[in-house]
Image (tube, rainbow, N blue to C red; front, side, top):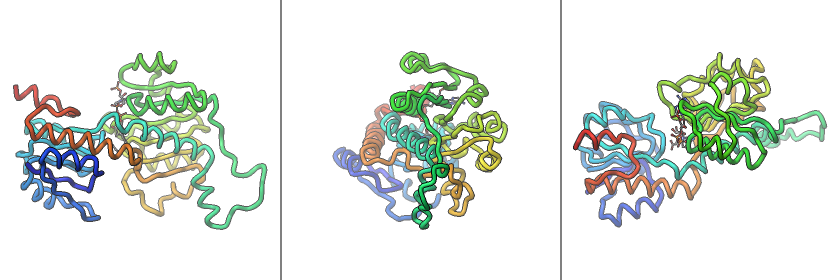
Length: 326
Ligand SMILES: NC(=O)C1=CN([C@@H]2O[C@H](COP(=O)(O)OP(=O)(O)OC[C@H]3O[C@@H](n4cnc5c(N)ncnc54)[C@H](OP(=O)(O)O)[C@@H]3O)[C@@H](O)[C@H]2O)C=CC1
Ligand SMILES: O=CC(=O)O
């Protein structure tokens, strides 16, 4: 049995695959592989372990022999899941193990933005430390403020816990369905989307990218927010409209923004958002700790092993593949 892996993954996941007797073929080049290269490699494999590679209908139809596709991510917006399901290909992902690290990234962006940390670091590099000015470089405090969570799921809950524990922040949220366990544990309050926008001091995005969430944070949404609000997105860049975000910051409709995800990625180096004191940007490193990436590689390997054994894969995105088979 052979698995094709679209990037080199941590040793922990590779080891598990090797111990299961699975032959590994890895894409080691420092460039993204083309669709043709992806198909050619998958045609020689029984399974695919995909690290962020877009998997569209053409690819899936060309590689319908794959017994399993294991994603090295929890998000699966880059995969045509409906086509995979219609072809009976199980898709696995890596939920849970990355929640804490990703919430830490949102917390880091919130704090860095509130104190203009990235901008001030850059200004020191440019020799602009200046003198001690009681009226300059002022940030905003977070203690006792209100955190609005758009998508109080696994990562949103971790972020809410951190903000409540660290700063005693009041938690409000919007999901399609109420999360009653979180309401009890954190004294969190469900609000409509519009109320969430209006009442948040910090608004943090933690939903998946879906047709319903795409472009949700647009000019109209930013206009409903407080002029003092900080917008944080560690979910997917396409959930906010980047031009509208820039316009909202320039017009003082909101105070600051912290982004781990942009649209497109990578963000171009001369993007005006990168020049703004109240903006912090990271290159999509939400889950990038040694511990978390190792744990993700293990989950992805477990999905590959189960799929190749013909067993139900443990972390499954499209359970319909099994119900339609039986
Ligand atoms: N920056 C990075 O490196 C990383 C980014 N991510 C991103 O974070 C996302 C969230 O991950 P995770 O917390 O594990 O996912 P979960 O499924 O646990 O949580 C998502 C939450 O969003 C809510 N939600 C979904 N759709 C909507 C909607 N239309 N309106 C309001 N709420 C909605 C869901 O509740 P309900 O269904 O009730 O609406 C759920 O509570 C991933 O999909 C991924 O895109 C994840 C890991 C790392
Ligand atoms: O963006 C990362 C993910 O795991 O999803």
